[in-house]
Length: 471
Image (cartoon, rainbow, N blue to C red; front, side, top):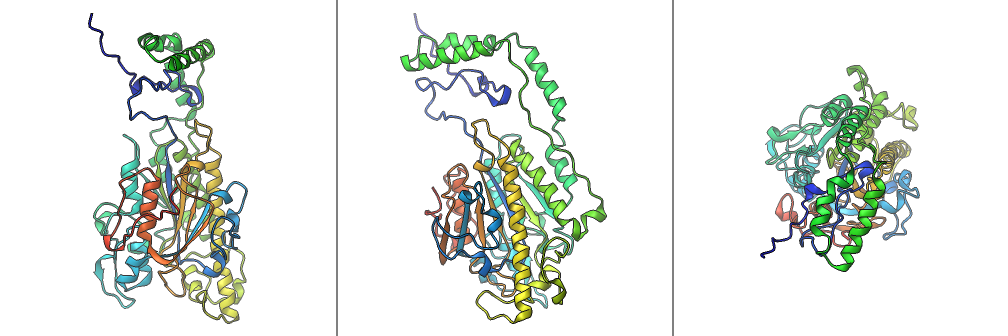
């Protein structure tokens, strides 16, 4: 008698039930194909943008390595949960923006996530301007990591187009870049919610649908009995023990199977157009966007997101929610305020000192928002017991190093999260301005699981991944 080849269980035969528990056959080492891997949570990547750079003197740690003292601006991230995941990457330059010249904010905004000099160049009285010349890193990674039928990415904003409708307002680009492929951040949380959760039934509806499926099953054991019969007695002794234990688990679940946790659909945020444009509502809008993004990542609706807090040359007024000596300053809007200050290596007069402190407080406020977002992610538990934050990297970026100088050296990169251990988090890395930000993006691509992600942006700026940061 010719024995038929042993039929291996397919991915479709692995049923996921209450709370994400696998109810079908366990992975059997002696039967599994070589490429079979234990299920692990997906990795997520989020870019958070704030305008006008930072204040290097209050941002840069005084020491490198794991035991660095967290500086003032980053102090909201110095918590027991977040500190081990906090990585500061200093001494990285945005060479693509340095080489293009022209308007500093335009060069920086269009190079920020593309790693290329801007394109479609137009000369203005404030210097050359243009659009991003290629795909942005968020989109390049998103198209590779998205599951079938999954939304590749979500782009959320807070007053990103309040002042400008041009290249100052865009950080993401599709393949080829240019104005035609610029991807706008959506400044209305209701729209972002609709795009992410519009096709997701309410929680009670989802539970009802799941219960309907459960009710149609006479027992969980019936569903997998054939699979057990097909492999029992034809596996190694070690795997037979695993099968027997799993069979006991299935039997113990009989009679008490129930509808478990489902993707909890958050409440749709609602803002009027007037509210969306109010500077005083900036924190409320940001919070709504963060809550929706966090829920979408936890529900695995998407794995890549951007949150754009205003646009380049931001005109946001922070007086309602950031403490500073505003009465002593001639300008209180963000861009104007940045030009009242001076660079970190320049002497400051009393007014410049007040302006510099206000800028530090603004950036510290952004740190607070990132900390809140991270804690939202930490509140979601994965099926393996880790949290969504454990498997995420939040990358804080800006279009320039410091507002007063428009420098592209010493770019202020912060990464919160280690992508499930793929990054060596919790340290300060200083690259002495010997590496371009293209190399950081290659590192993130590899950490997201793209092993062949060896270049990004303009090849002339690529050296390779930051191997000391990459686990």
